[in-house]
Length: 415
Image 1 (cartoon, one colour):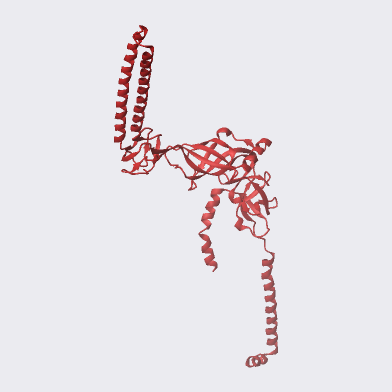
Image 2 (spheres, helix red, strand yellow):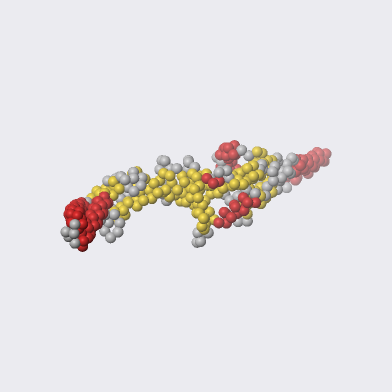
């Protein structure tokens, strides 16, 4: 009330000037607000987002099939006790390499030495009887011709000689059997290879009733890898080769095989395909294949599970895309294609059976010259156009690494 009294106390001329100034100020505020809002509504649009793309360029691609496999020794021999007795000595170091014929175990040979000596004595007795029977037959012959003895006596003497000869042959065979059994007392390596642990210890009674297994020798250079392929894939491949859509890989009769170990690394040496089984497993519908791998360093061991990569065919005018460019789902495989207008649209594609060297082989869905988006998916905002730039794998990974630590800082500043 006091302020209003003061205003009324002002002269009329001065009061009019104050009111006019207030009206001008109010008008200027509206104009200023309008002027400030104009640039915000009529400013230029942000530039299009840059995304990494690759241009579709068909080329000849080898179709590599990746299949699960298992390693197997090329030769396996069980060392068994063929002579019954007490095991006296182990003559090898477990886990070492042995040569064919190398002594491995020693079984008590005393009973077999005695059997050999008995067989030698029996042979000597049979030979003595043969000498006597031969001499008598030779002495009876002229007597029979002179009718000094009956012909029957001569026939009996000749028969005795033949019997003595048979006894000598039987004694020789018995001696040979005794020598063989004596040889079995020294157990040797049947093949060259690597021997595992001893399955029995000294003092054990072996070879009674059945041939006791003592150890296992495995030849691991070279190694075999056995793997299977479904009959569906085999038939599809053969039909594609017959129709001309695919062509046979060079040297397909001895196709090169690569092995991927359990840790994801690729074995350094290539193998060769040996054969494809002629029959199909009725329980699984699979065809068995086998390849041979060199293993000079002993890195590969029997029983290891591996992945086998084998080139079975080649596809002309095929398209290879980086794996990160393809989105895989239950609804199918898609890629993002950048059109001539700069807009991105999904495109369904058909892929090969397996990825190769970090790339998918696209069998259908793309045309030469089209641009497929590989990087920058997280930058897409709405249906607006994008700016495609050539994708460089190393540059893209470096940019991603550089931007990773900067994100938390900007988020922190925003908070």
